[in-house]
Amino acid sequence: MFQSFEDHSEGARAGERLSALRAEFKKHGLDGFIVPHADEYQNEYLPPNAERLAWISGFTGSAGMVIVLHDKAVIFVDGRYTLQVQDQVDSELFEIQHLIDMPPTKWLEANLQSNKVVGYDPWLHTSDGVKRLKQACRKAEANLVAVDHNPLDAVWSDRPAAPQAPMRVHEGEFAGRDSADKRAEIGKQLGEHNCEAVVISAPPSIAWLFNIRGGDVSHTPLVLASAILKQDGSAELFVDPAKVTDEVRSHLGNEISIRTPDDLSDSLEALGEKDAKVWLDPNGTPSWFFDQLDHAGAKILRRRDPCALPKAIKNTAEVSGTKEAHRRDGAALTRFLAWLDAEAPSGAVDEITAVKKLESLRRENPELEDISFETISGSGPNGAIVHYRVTEGSNRKLQNGELFLVDSGAQYRDGTTDVTRTVPIGEPSDEMRDRFTRVLKGHIALSAARFPVGTNGATLDILARKALWDAGFDYDHGTGHGVGSFLSVHEGPQGIHKRSTDVELKPGMIVSNEPGYYKTDGYGIRIENLIVVTEAADIDGGERPMMGFEELTLAPIDRRLIDASMLSAQELDWLNAYHARVRDEISPLVDTETKKWLKDVTKKITA
Image 1 (cartoon, rainbow, N blue to C red):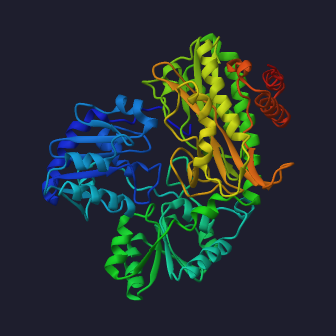
Image 2 (tube, rainbow, N blue to C red):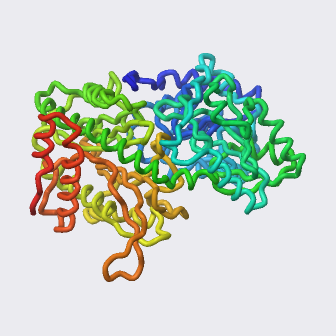
């Protein structure tokens, strides 16, 4: 299995660990310490040796922060994890706060006493993040200081070793562009801003820029490395040399120097000695780099990672590859849904059995590399936990009268998938049909949207929520996130969410479309497809060319949960056309029995 079902949370040990950390404060002259969910590369998903937040609190989600003071501790999570954090974290030891309602900065202002000293590890916070925290501490008349040695690491006696997976080449047939071409493009941007170099610290950008992949992070083919790229396209790549195979060395060529991470300080010092202007991303690069370059005397240009946008805009080869990946993945998912339809009513299927079956069907394809994240397999009330991870302890049967939500994805050399389907076990209630149909209306509205050049994701977000808002409902997560090409299943800088953003949607960008509804202790509903932004095209009678979306995900949407009377003629047309396409493209890829099932579940729906 690509995933296990062990409960990794060690919340029961949080008390002793808090005591150990607080005792360590004295050695560092601290009155408190901030523990973010982050590693030295600002990854979303972390290797085991960087799971500091989970170690201190027991919380295993992919986003959050803990602040530990001598007399109190607090954990902050967002709307995806409000139920999970209550299950995993001891509320007697930690206050539990919502990141939006009570952000860490606001909490620090209210809880820090004057003249207290709070520490942070500059490798684990971005420059912008540190700036906000420092402002909050100043308002409390307290001090925020960087530490040379992380006090949590000092008391984490059984900390796992750093990952050592070998790097490998991401071939041109999948990448679509040579590394030299990409480096020349970024070098040109450096010249336009009079910068001698840019520091690239995000592993997805490293993977894209050098056309390499790794295995240092579970389910995401990343190599943990950083780089300094020069204006002429040459670069220093800072990585454990043990990870660099002969094939990768040959692929990188003479313009790329392999250096160890310990060489970073010297290279940054050298830029300072040249009085160089260096490009850094203040919202993605660890604060440590800013501190080093400031100390060395370099000039700093604070701008978004120059790899982020071109990485997000998939080229022709990447879009074509992603479509192929979704076809084979859609076949596996369709076979799973057919199996589930036959087996679940018996009461013999549980959440873990479902995950194992889905993975086994994906594994039948020799092109599968991995899953793209741990499958969310939530029956009944577990489906209401947005980022639920099934364990042996939480596992439950799929029961008649309940809903089952399965959110999964896969990694192929030519593309990354992410898809969610919600299905009824037995007969759904009228309430379930109403909520599902409202989610579907939002899903269709976003998928069918036409929009002018320059539109950002925040502008479109309301389309996915309106049918829910009309009835007084909403969901506490974004509507869409970017997705990489055999890279991260969550990729920026684009997205579709309530938060304002200056990133316009551009042709070739892949985003998810995943509105949902979650009834605490009842059920969860989510419908997720990946979609790609299309080139602007004229509309008959229109005055401006409009862009749109093309569906990538190919899998049936459960008709039993749809109240057709709630759908407009245009919505029915969209649904029937989508199901016809799923039937046409997936049928040749599945067995006879599944083909018969698919034909039945994609029949035309009428009002």
